[in-house]
Image 1 (cartoon, helix red, strand yellow):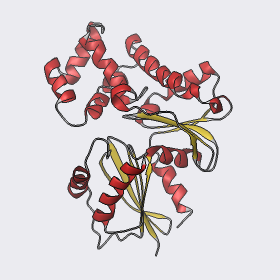
Image 2 (spheres, one colour):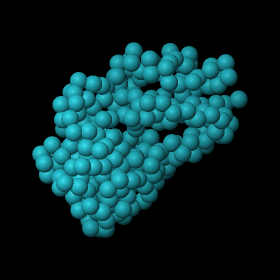
Image 3 (cartoon, rainbow, N blue to C red):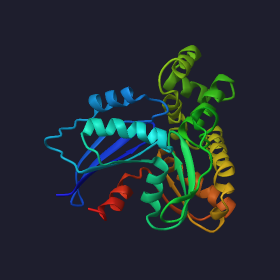
Image 4 (cartoon, rainbow, N blue to C red):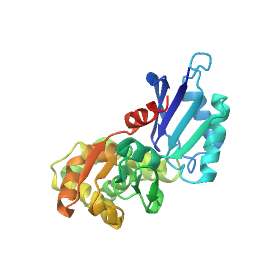
Length: 283
């Protein structure tokens, strides 16, 4: 009986789904995995503490893992070592989250694929492989349009006293007024990118305020400018988006596509369902 475990991981969360003969059997969710931010020991601890896996019940023949930070061979090998050890299997395929998005959203069609979640990324996919991909510089100097990118802008608007009284009070209600405590989370605690992304709550829950709309549009426009518009294929192929930020602010993405005269393919919150369809064909 052929069975495969499929995992799709961003920097914040990981979806795990077991397929057996093309049928979805069990589904789990854990924290995100990123080999740039976590050691092999950290990843193993996460799996042991968060994944309720019983190998005697959930036997698998193979594992297809897609994850943030798994775009180069060294990081893929790090993740593969941990997964092979934890699940006690040899057949483990580790690919990037960009491949996950492309396979899930495009299938066997061509398109420009974009990830807008805690972080951001993009590529041109020819229906089989990624043929072109812009540099992804991470949360410190890149990730335009992402949750952590927008979170930085929210924090700057508050700390630099740019917000009006209404939004300043909202910020303090949600996140507190102690800048020192916020800076401690950013510079002394793990996963500052995840923390920054939590600040997007202010944008989600205060739509319609002109400052909120300006931040959302400016941040997404930065992603269009630095990434989407750099692909010549963007002008004649559909654009595909996945990630919580893309899903939440799809109205702004649609408006920007209209402004630049670009075609939207689809926008999905997560690629996991598309990945299940992709892999069902092989089981």
